[in-house]
Image (tube, rainbow, N blue to C red):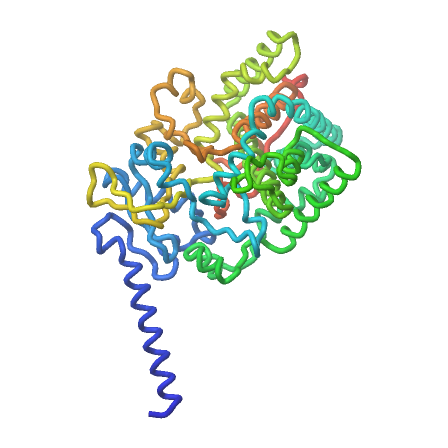
Length: 508
């Protein structure tokens, strides 16, 4: 046999062996007798993802198909066998009771070669615990109260921007984009201490970068599938997922911010000031403590995730809330009435305590987040083999990804009857008492819930209060009824949310 023929034989044997391993991997759930849908060889159960179907659509379909078949069903996250949880008792065990075994998310991060991925949302193990402990003081109710006036200042700027459009006889525009400018300016002020000016200039630097964060990808579908299927291998190969332009922008902004504050002795009670304290090691307990000083790259990663999570989720939720209130003007009037009555009880001043007293406001936003969960799922990874109590056949193996389908739970008719209907009464004090905490998961639950929940709720309540006190929202010819969604991972509206706005004084 010639050397060339030998090499061909070896290559064919190697490829056959790899195919055998992949084929075996893609039959994981069939061998174990766990309910699942037949996977595509390369895409798993995500065929058509971001082309013909969104991740939310896929998860909801799998959840609806297998609900009631057992505590979980199997599915394939590309080439990776994964668990999709169906039983609420198991969800509670994973997020709360047995959290120690499911503390990690198991998603890709590579702090060395892709520094923006080294943030609280992606990190696992001791890194996550140490960082969570360090950042928790940033989001106490006391800190939120301190940031409240800053948000009011940006809300005033929002009113100026709306009035400017109305003065030019413009009454219809995309409120998804308007709310993104509002929350971008809020986060810029509260996180970076920077006036972003997105409301005055939609093409301001921070807003442009925010758009790129959502639409830009460093790699194509095949490379992304590899990174998601084999995150540890991708890390060893020194791969990255963030576009370099975005990484360079945030590293520059944070470095410049630090240099300016140190040079001019600037200290504020904001997120950046806390990160700077951590950078100097002020929270260290001992040399061996996990609460070591943060590097500039680590600071940047935390500022980055605060920016992303703070502006996009809140702005989209606000736009969805305005959409639903425009479709049901009786609900809009009820909320407007509550706002006015509550402010009157507080000596005609909109205070932090006043905001906390608006019960129907909370119901409207909770129902918005139920119907439109921007993140359609929660991800966890098993630290050790886990046998589901009472179901010896159902074993979650060590290292296996666990998906909790928020979108499926939120649309489960057994939990929320007539789930397509927007009904804030689902979140009255009495109704909430009848459900479990894991029946509503826009912020997660348990020790790894969203650390910025208070901040997100605050800026959304402020935004709605300012808008509804002065304007009435109604559908127009450009309003999508029913709503159509992009095929992206987050639940975003297709083509924006166009509504007609009129000053309250012009109502007939």
